[in-house]
Length: 72
Length: 205
Image (cartoon, rainbow over all chains, first blue to last red; front, side, top):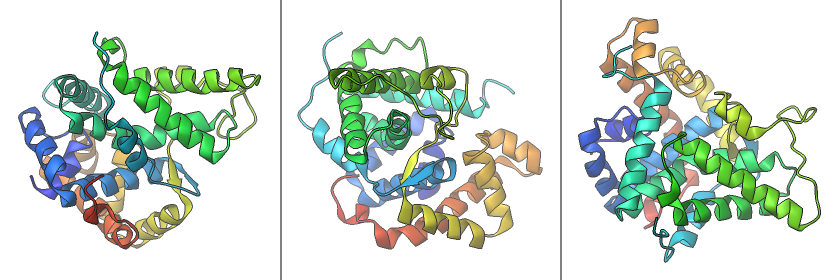
């Protein structure tokens, strides 16, 4: 998965049949996660306003560990 | 606009539905990506209820936990973000009512009450996102420094919400050039942010 494909991923521009490969890269490759995290941050900043803290996602993802999806 | 080249919002909606389906099938990374993409917008939405920073973060986390547990309840009647935003608003309102507070909403200019969910449903994207002050300043400076071609493409995508196809048509450039400019613009800014982050050294996002 190339960095430009990861950039396209967050815009919904990546071909659907590459989504599995993109998620696979995000699951195992810290550089891929960094690209997506920073590219998303850039977009959020351009649309948003600033606060004193950032980095909720890491804490949210840690809180999700061990949580299960309820059955339908 | 053909179905092969959906507008930006439709492309995002389609991506989100695929991510939800994969998360329901047990692929946690799919939900992680939804968290990374929407956490700041959800925090911004909750922040309209005049709450302190720690409470906003707690409620943002609670909203994502509820969304994850209840993911099988996402029927696709609305966009995933609208469904998530409804959970976040209910989480904030419940928090306020438990403390005997009326859920008063601050608009972006702090002078009117509005319904955040109605604003989202009507396509109003002004709920924005929250970003740290330091990062916000670095990003603003980088935007000033980058080449006009890159800045133009990135602003059309991120601020105006245009699809790659719409950007290509507006600027008279091929789709791959749009993809390249948006990527290079993001990387120009990301390069300035990397020293501040530790994502690359982490096993997490």
